[in-house]
Length: 190
Ligand code: GRF
View 1 (cartoon, rainbow, N blue to C red):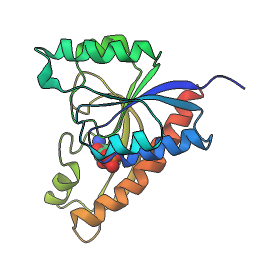
View 2 (view 1 turned 60 degrees about the horizontal axis):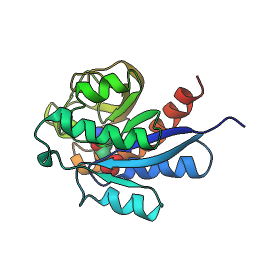
View 3 (view 1 turned 180 degrees about the vertical axis):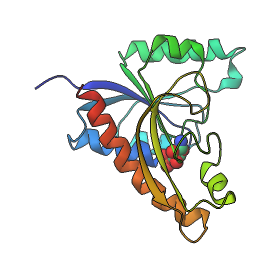
């Protein structure tokens, strides 16, 4: 049996993708271990999820640091302490800066709720519905310095339901949980 890949999940919100990844690690579908959950929002629901799962939580508030580099240097200190190999962004609402990018070249993955390059940035599902598209979807990609611009690893289409944000978001989330798991399994088996 090969050793498990050590990952950090970065999240700022409800953490349903964190939950799906944690479950896949626990049941052995994904040969990885979440060694730390990094958040910029100490009050986010994902923190409760991580604590319940017995996973170390590292919360860093950007406003406590004078620069983005200092903020990322503090995060990097924690990542190094626990030997993290890959950064998995799951609803982390901050742009990754040069400091983390150069420490983890081509080892930072993100999931985005649209078929990139369409609808990057915030409220991708709202943007898609606003534009009247009938098909949107999910993208898993490597992270570079841009906003949702790195090389695409996997995509899956999801139909817009009744032009409704909530119904479509529910369908997108279900696909995200499956696609993120499958993509990470493939990535870590290379
Ligand atoms: C997901 O839609 C993800 O694609 C986006 O942020 C959302 C996070 O949802 N980047 P959750 O916190 O994992 O439930």
